[in-house]
Image 1 (cartoon, rainbow, N blue to C red):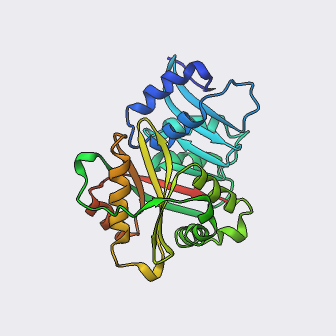
Image 2 (cartoon, one colour):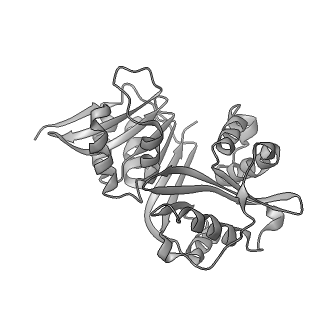
Image 3 (tube, rainbow, N blue to C red):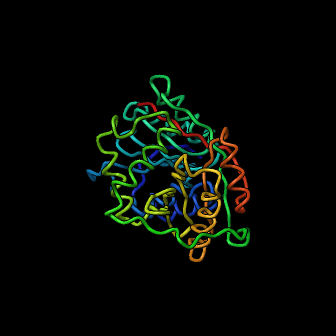
Amino acid sequence: MPVTVQQLVPTDTDALKALLGKDPSHNLYLLGLLEEFGITPADSRCSYSFWGRFDGKTLTSALFVGGEGGLLVPSAGDGSATGVIADALADRVRLKAAVGEKSAVDALVRSLCTGKPRTSKTHRLFSVSADDLGPFTNPTLRLAREEDLKRVMPLASGYVRELHDRDAPAEDPHFEARVAQRIRAKRTYVLEENGELVFKVDIGSRSQYGAELEGLYTVPSQRGRGHATLCLGQISRFLLSSLPRLTLRVDEKDESMARIARKVGYLASRTHRLVLVE
């Protein structure tokens, strides 16, 4: 059967859902993008698109392209299939950021990265279902409110500084707006003690298939007190009351967070990679 690469159109939605649904844990981020944005007609002026590799009429791999390379998210699976899509898009896409299963992101870097990535992190994907959860809860974890923005900002920027060694507010003029948008979308949860926000966690992606958590951060002065364990358990229990699974990416060098995830009940799975070029 001939192999082709095509931009996906709305009539491909069911085929894409079927492909991603074969491995929902490793495709949760992409499933969330699909559910939130949907597939637009090929002639639309949207700033994002979905592309697919077809064997004949069968969709075998997919790639989300946001902002002509501002964010690339490949489907999980054979990295060589992602490489076929990347090669086909080499004249129109320049990778600025990518996240996904390691072999697929490696293929994107080989074809679409014109220089050495500024940041390259390997993560272990952890996943959990309701049956796996331990007894850890903290019912005082709450949704962040819009009036919390100025207090959430130090936690959000602290997370980026520790993860990527970047001063996000200074380098990114849209950083505060994105933090505010997550709060408005009810995707940021915080723990407040004695009038101080000491912990935060974000829902990075959510769909009927599950949700991916990100941005777990405890202020340095409050570490070692169990906040991350109890709050991760709390939000996991809350979300799993209506969703089938949760995932969490943990830097492979971050043994502390890996221990917390395992303690709460998360199980380690395959390796993912995050790449930032600019």
